[in-house]
Image 1 (cartoon, helix red, strand yellow):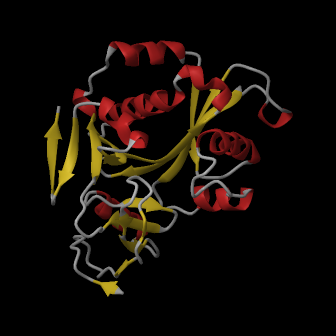
Image 2: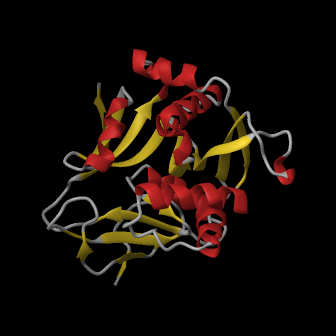
Length: 252
């Protein structure tokens, strides 16, 4: 059903839709619904930017936000970059990955990326909704974005095939959006054979560093759900702000 009730601060009216009820992927026994809009046309990037500030997340050319009856467990989280607290644990992760090279590039899928992605899904999310994604599905996820969408590849020294000679071994990838006031991590994955490096944490730390270098005040981490083990890691990156109603509230 169409909606026009969300103020995006854009001149062009935006049509919103509501999904049918479905099982909640985070809290057992709960039902979720989402409100969403299509990110198409010349205003797609501006709309994604505006909706991100209202707690929406992007998936391909869709921006969505939970709209569940009687539940507000999904909380939008963003890190305050200028005041980020580098803990002793974080310093260890950075030291462990000091040999990693970062490469920011256009959002274009490769089979090398898919091999890492496939191994990550099979090991960590074999029973999830993305478990059956093919190389074509992966390419759709990576390459369907907005003007601000890009990839960040992380490589470690090691043997590679001929196509990546001299660039190092691909160990992690982040799909990221550039917003007017920050970076938004859309999806990230890593080589599970290198799990001891703490690559998931490292990618967040590196995005905090990138945002700082770019003069951007925030890193958007998506939703945090208090009673969901999958989401617990996000609270480690402080200080941060949570979207409460229509305002971002400080959490230290």
